[in-house]
Image (cartoon, rainbow, N blue to C red; front, side, top):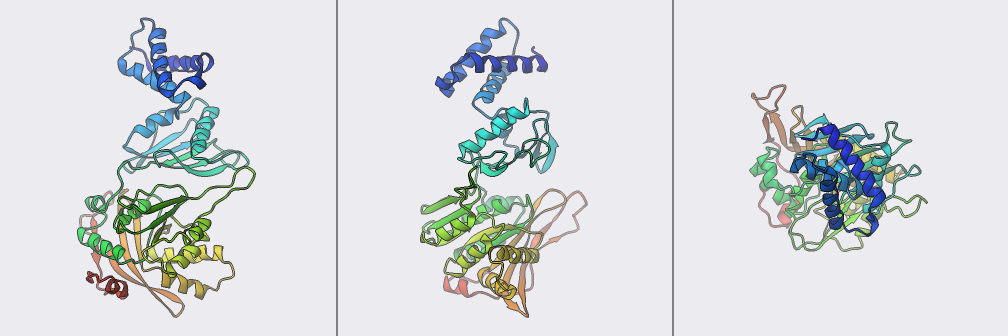
Length: 413
């Protein structure tokens, strides 16, 4: 059998030959694959090679010409949830919540840059030394962030958050232990009654996943506008759905379309609800104003370490969009716009849990009042290695029940 080293050398020789001798521009994908299969059989010339090795060689050569090279194999592995490429030689993956180094690399920095340009170009984006940072996505919806030298000191950096082939549902969240059936019923009622819900959490806590699951409670006859940096939401069963995606400026500094631009534009598109994938800056003000001007039932997410931290971060974001706005006015905007904050965390055992569901009340003595409805409590089975517990109802009654009454919903909290 051909050794791994011999296989790699053979693959590289074929790749060079194919690039130099084949009319690549005039061959379709299928024709190229067939030509490569014939070439491999011909070049082996009696050397024993298993059918699996032969298929790998063809696939690797094909990927280096038309695909994404090493990335193609990684992206096909459904057990991998995140890919981190720190220059051509250092590839890390996340599998089952744990990060590990992969025994694979790109041939050179130039090869990695070629793959990056292929990814970015396919999504209609641009990245270069003049504009070295870009957020984009793969064809399957996987989220991609690219940082090029000289900003990155380790070579081109690519981070990919894999896109789930099956949209997350509340039923799956129940199976994973993130919420209970009782809480799922409560959330369903709140979404249907058009409560404005904000999902907060740290990196990798599952905010987008939870938002996706929650969005599937939106009645299918409503008109929904989704706004994201890189489109990754998978809303099912919504017929009247418009998905908008922001765009970076091109190398000439023109053509930028921000989340703020999209929120403002969406208000002229007769939305019944607006779903903003994530707020990070001044667009928070536009989102809050949309929630305050008749677009109840809107959903969004943001980075924070706790529910109260999320309120502080929203204040900072609004100030980025309106530097002269008084803090009391900002707090009034937040308190009147948001109804519910759901806080998620990634815990010490790498599990993702819903930590709190909190009602946002009025401003009192200059401070936004919070009313915790559910809180995660660890039980006696918790250890340092494993977290055990559940989201439990607090003794606090729900205060703002007007939307439930207007929607004719039974008060379930």
